[in-house]
Image (cartoon, rainbow, N blue to C red; front, side):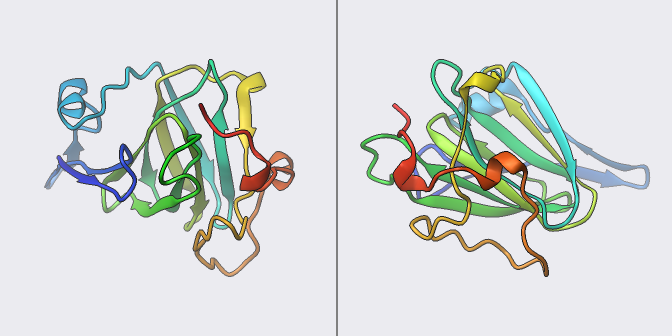
Length: 182
């Protein structure tokens, strides 16, 4: 496994090893000891999976205290443009983002620490996206922010159509309207 630190401390991109042969492939997608050695000491308690069509945009989301979550995300089939935004109160990188293309072929994972908003744009039909969370989901703790806030400067890919959003995601405030993570 290769670990790449990003320009925002704590946010990591990981590339898992893939062993291919005539039968197909094998990849260890998570090993607590290896991930702890890489600086990821989260204890994951919930796995989630979504399947989406090209143009779907999910995010930007996080959970408020006491239900904040760190996430380890990856693509099983297809491709996404994955984004994390620093929303930690007082952080030197507050409002900045890190983005990466995650695909089934490149075997990249994104580690999203607590204190970050997360979202992704689906680049291919029938994309299967999986993520581990270190805390359980609680709807009352759900929070969100506008994906297209100019203050964030996120270069979302052009997929040939307007982003497909949930009704909730259409109503999220901009960065200036959120309560920063503490």
